[in-house]
Length: 346
Picture (cartoon, one colour):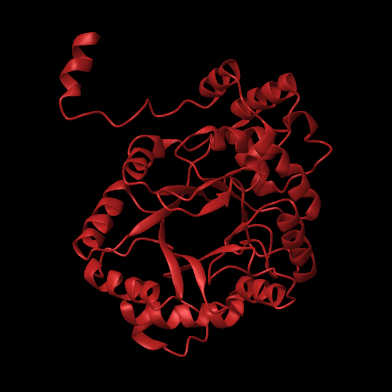
């Protein structure tokens, strides 16, 4: 396993982050991701630790969806794994999230809907601690931006958790570049560290983050972890073996949409002798702005295959072919003056 610093912090994390969004009792498709039972989840986490993965990602809404919202099942599964002892908790850099509504929330009513009020953050944080059977969280992340609650209130809540020793670092998820800059400016005014990580969507099929998000995060010393780095397995499909691995109607519809690109991608992977999923992950890790893709293995076998990704070093010719198959947005966002310059080049 390889390691790097999480953004500008002095803490090192593995270049693969174990995602737990599929731990639970749900279905493998749709919004309810939890489809790995507890026994297999514990086996996956043990194997991840043995392989050197020290970075785990979860959220209070992962695992299953009840009639009244999310129940926190994935956190409970992790908590029961921690309770086995053997240094499990001490060896894990754990990240969880807050923002969405929870089922059977004791603080129900008008304050239940998703937001990042001080009121909600404090109460949902304590709920996560109980489910995770721990007294601290290394990385506490905002699941989505809340543009209604002022940053003064949000930082009052998160700063309090850090000062109390219950949280080490604060992160975000699904923020735009300008959201990150507003958050950091508000934190600086409070003489607080602010954000150290942003969890974002970035993969071969979705490269818009290259325009502003990745440059902004790099400028601010913020690490980047990637949710659904394989687009729910789409970038792991071997197009030459579709008949051997039957897919659902939903997945086949998406495959048809991107068939030409996926076929070219499988041809590339065949040429270099690597599996599709590992090439996609290696491409993400190659970007210096990226800290770690958040992988979501559905089995121990999936995890073992994904470990190969950190060993793959893509050469310039392979990177060029990937750019041709999956074109990016064209570099960084243009400067204010560049419109005329670009026009004159034509």
